[in-house]
Length: 324
Image (tube, rainbow, N blue to C red; front, side, top):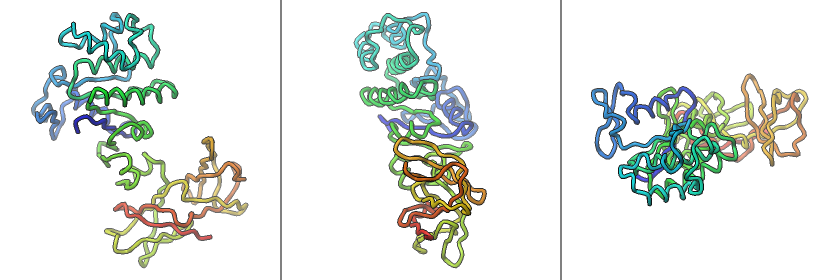
């Protein structure tokens, strides 16, 4: 959609970069086609050259011209090199106006990425594609540049695709997120819709780090080692095979003879996330800071009654009930 930022999200090897290269014109699709502004730019029989596509690129390694200063890097892509108002406006927008005479080697990583963004936006292209632009930056700079990117794109009314393997990055700044795995698109929706209705178990696992366990559906009821699942039978379109729930849907009860074994605890500031092994399954469990259980100790695990979860296939909403 014109003027939106689409996040292309997926693990390494899922096909993100291949799709990016097809969009940019570096690869030919074996099937299907790519359309930009109602014109086919790629198909199995035709590929419009990259330089004729009206698509801007921001690469992981910036791809700046080392022999040109900041000002000349931005002006390079302008059809009319004397279009100084736009170049000045872009440099001010990305916060580099005071560095216009500096060369790329004199800039920090974050500043070089801002420069790459300004240069890509300078010609006013129809589409901007960003290939994991923040992956080599430290955490603080990465968070700052996410906000800069979002604000700059909105100021330019630019349409863009952000390629990333970081769910937090995609959900945090993108208008819509497309999630891929093994070359297949699992879901494309707004972040809020994806959270409220994850289309597949992979979405819940990869994007939201939810727990997924296999279940047995017998005589219209579902029981698990952690409690029961309440679902309205008329909602089921198929026999449910998997149950998905988040880390706050479980509670730990210390028990020296319990089936659960705490394998690790990750400190998150105001809480812990524990990884607990139960019957060869690893579950993520939310713990308050005062929960008295240590790594290597045994425990019981129960559902937190009243928590919502999902059954698959079908992404059917259900309610958990504790055994306790």
